[in-house]
Length: 115
Image 1 (cartoon, rainbow, N blue to C red):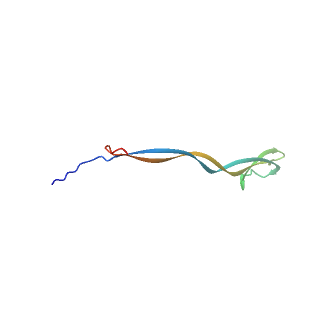
Image 2: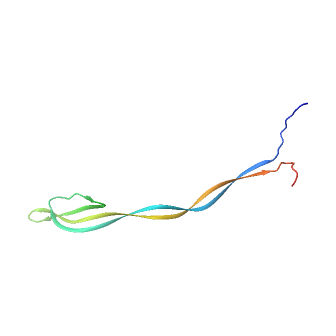
Image 3: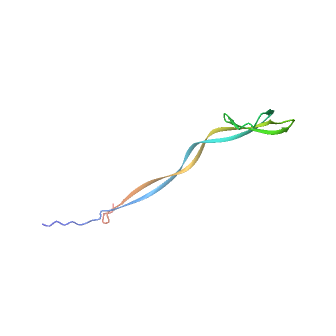
């Protein structure tokens, strides 16, 4: 007795990839920052220049001018106040996302009887 091996095709397999697209809402928090400029008239004499200063969210810039009198003195003319305001709001937008799917099909053997 002798034993032999042989290769026999019993079918074939095909794999394919399908891509699907759909829109999905995306929500994000947006931050908006605005500046408000306010000019405040002061009109008083000061002994020297006043450095810029921070008062909470407000930056105060002092404006001075020289006024000729018997002596030169500094007069605070106005203060420019710049205030920072921040607001937040929700934003919803739609983005397109993709998902792939693999479909596997099997062919019958080449010499299989028809069903």
